[in-house]
Image (cartoon, rainbow, N blue to C red; front, side):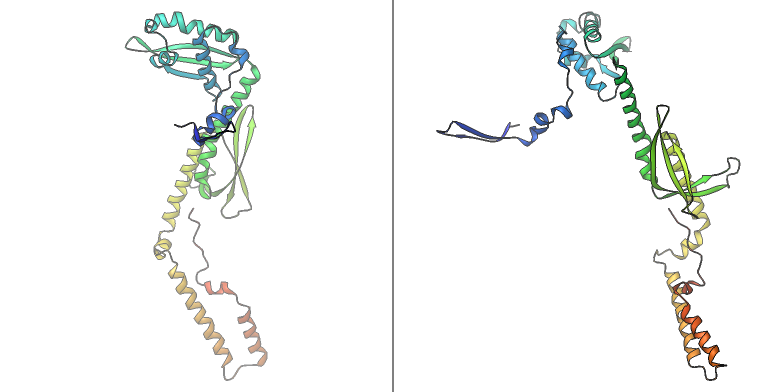
Length: 312
């Protein structure tokens, strides 16, 4: 990869003009944001190069809210560039790993310990357990981890339920005792005793002004909401199969035909009154015409006043 997009030397002026390769910008300009910063005061007292490299690795994981790091022994040895004479576990442990962790715990801002995993009686993996020494940093990290958890387990899956109708049970002993509630995307995050909760606002389908709060704090509860939506859909299609079949083309042709018939009937009524040979009285005729004029578009649906229930 070239370092420069262009490089120009002006002869006689002793000047060089250049432009860096755009691909290198994140590595040169985003160091504060995209890379782990190592406090100089924490590594200056460290004498071992192995300890500095292990500290860098563990601190990078800790800044990503990971308190446990699982590494294969062979990979760690390759990263540290240990000589072949220290490939054996007993030599690596005595000369590299334990002295490095001793220095890290004594001079840096983190605490680290390790355990091992075996395959066929041979140690193949090292599991590091790490945390900050500073209590406030540990609290801040725990809060960050909780925010990440609630985003992944609750907030993100909730987008799949937006504008969906749920068959919410009102009586655990009666499977038919349910109320139809809709999630419109309204929620807020609250902290209760160090734990985050998401308070949903659900509205009743029959009365949108009436709201129902619901507290969600885990992925398991999201799965229950999805099951409620599936239950609602099953009941919807069972109860409204005939209406859906009548409108199977999706264009509402049955309803259009009904509107046309009602419109034709209204015109015939108006024409009959206007051409009636012997009206009873002038007042009665005027009264009938006024009633017809007061009719609105809703009258066209007189034989079809019941709307389809929402299929959400």
